[in-house]
Image (cartoon, rainbow, N blue to C red):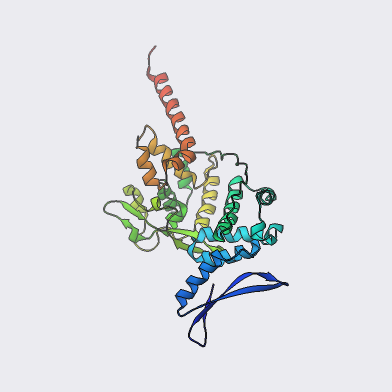
Length: 334
């Protein structure tokens, strides 16, 4: 949404409010200052009678709210609009005519997508409807995806992969073993490291924004802003100036896949190192408290930690049980 200065000295903002005879209709808002004109325009946009198609409403939403969204969220919303609204029949429906059956059918046309992706797409459209104050409750049912089968690597497997990694990837693996995410790792600089206390301050992340470019942003959640203590060996791996891991998250993923293949271990993802961290920290070998692990890993809630990583913890428990049984098998005289 743009404001233009008029010869009178006032500022004007033109807002699209629909189509008439194939031509776009506009509403003009004027005010003595640019800030006031923009403020009035946003207010009008929200409370004006709904005379927009869903496609037009999405465009308006992205233009007005886009600058306030995180780069990652904006990228997802723009992708949803391009792929599933702009060219779909639902895009031509007037906002006040959108119904639950229409949205249910729309979701049904998203063939081959995971349940979570469908929910994200639906969340974008419902956000657009809410922004334009369409006061309806939509009850769209989306079948959940089958839960991902997590694999938690062993310490031996992580060491084998690290042995096949180049210097930069080895730094990334070392940091991920302390619960850091890819985007957080790629945003770190030497200024974030206290080499005396072996602490690393995490307060930013590298994320893919609109246009597939990479931008610095705040971490995933407020809980993700944290200080993590690492080992002296990890500190010794890190450079004393500049970026600690001077590559993008995608490059980390690609190099990690190659390292896993060369190591000849059971395939696992770079992100699985977070479940590896959780399982080791919570295992009998360390016995860290669940709340401590949640804080160190930057999980927003204990529920999120549990829902994603209980399987990892169960794997570690199974290994502990086997180790205990083997110990008694070898040492208990019966």
